[in-house]
Length: 409
Image 1 (cartoon, rainbow, N blue to C red):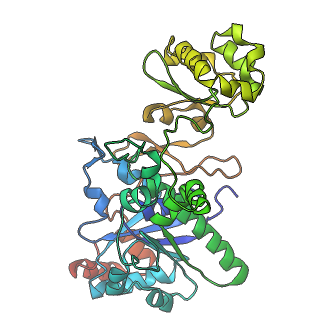
Image 2 (image 1 turned 90 degrees about the vertical axis):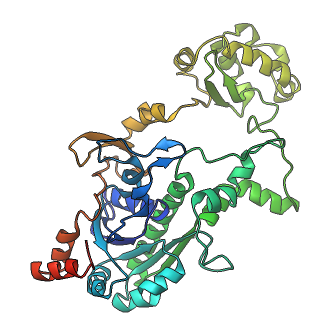
């Protein structure tokens, strides 16, 4: 059961990351994904050369992480959906699919004949899934969004990170941050819809919005604001438990950071202060209760900060390895990609790119039956057009006719 969606066919008519990331997760889970790209331009994300100030690819390499992450293990077919000649191809793709997945806006879906009614007329049993900016209902149903707007800004995460006197809005920590979280959410919705159809025989219509995902991610403060009757006051957040110096972040001597989250300070006090080289505080009668620790928290925090600032990051990660209380090093992207726990659990997977060069990608976080993820590189633009058309029953003569008509690439 390590590939529980083996045999499920997903037709993806989408671009960028939000919805394609969902299909990438489903591919990790065993589904067969056919990605429809514009016959001339392909997925618009293929044209991005810089993201958040970083180069999106490297000269001389076919491997572009911005495309590989949300599109691994798929096949690509180039179709001009606006060309009437392509309709027979789309019809056959829809007819054989279990799920139709798109992030095209309602107006474009209508123009291209991709509405629920038109897709269901071809395949009444298909699960129809949209990834939207602001939901399928309401005043913004026809408005587009990227995760920076719908998820991050409007969805509450940006405001939650900004201190009261900030001069700059906090931006997302990584490209496609909300898109990847949203894609995982869509994948879960599709899996539920597949289970529901198997149980009841009824196919679902599924919509997941970036705004909805943003509100879900920030639901603690949203729910609290609704409960208290107004916006929450701006506070400087150094930890989840004010007054507890065994929570929060501390800087090392080489300007790296360590995060601690020991919400039961008396339980971990002696072990923690000993690890920090403050053995004289172990068993100190002044700090045996939560109340006394809170009363002296500012002074204690200073002691802890001075101790941690006396040694570099690498020394501390070695010293604290066996600490029983919850803590973590603040890792950068390179360190995360080599994290021993991620690697041991098969969440960093090696694939071979189109040039035959080994590359690595992050797998989705769900593991089935303790089995490794089976993953291949993302397709080149329209790489599988001929293969897919032949599978659909089109002979070489018809294939050439479709290409001459500009219906497929």
